[in-house]
Amino acid sequence: EVHVVESGGGLVQPGGSLRLSCAASGFPFRSYAMSWVRQAPGKGLEWVSSISLTGIRKTYADSLKGRFTVSRDNAKNTLYLQMNNLKPEDTAVYYCVQGDTSPWSKRGQGTQVTVSS
Image 1 (cartoon, rainbow, N blue to C red):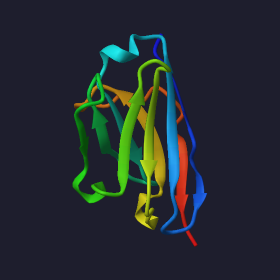
Image 2 (image 1 turned 180 degrees about the horizontal axis):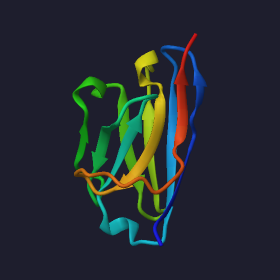
Image 3 (image 1 turned 30 degrees about the horizontal axis):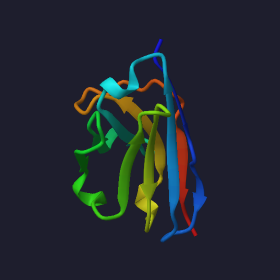
């Protein structure tokens, strides 16, 4: 059974940073591209970033380029998202998902990121 646990969210002021983690189990993590998606209050899922199996290829939503960095540690079955210069519009619940194309299937509870002064 696919199991992911997202963590690292919290309340941060505009301009601040957070590092999200996603611990995965129940599937061969190193055999899957992985992605981060987010859901703001009252809105649908928005793709944030994807990373290839080996971590060589990384893609980002245009609005996030230069601020967010995705990475993975296949030895630890863990996906990361470093978020810098956070903005209020980044407020959302962040989820890690398998694959790099929609439709996205949320498996975990997500981690809440709130950017506010």
